[in-house]
Length: 164
Image: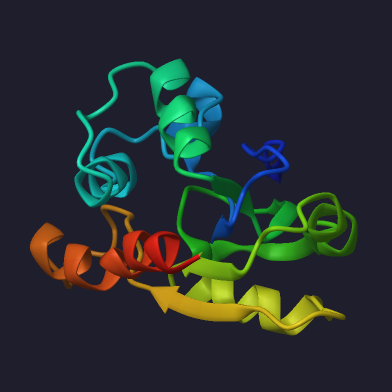
């Protein structure tokens, strides 16, 4: 099945770009980034920034914008059955040259999982230096680490925001 990603959640003040691979089935059905209630993404960010866990999608987007975080996917489109990144075929990357030119304050690009980092490395060539970090996937399919273990690694997002 051919699927499309969403537009980025961002504004020109963003300093950190968080990249997933492609929204899962539940996210696509809800038309929301990280729409699976078992995904740790929103809980991690609210914990890192010491804010209440957002309830609705508007509040979730505001959490990102307030903290100068942009969210997008490495892939614009692909073919995939189900939600697993391992099932992705015929992938098409997003246009990072234009995006990064429109977001000149981004200094850190963080990947939500190994597959996002691998697709980025495969398709994207940058003309500016950025810091990069690959974080453990927030997906419920990535059960090899607990929330607390993921939080330790994801805290780099809060630390980098404080250093910028």
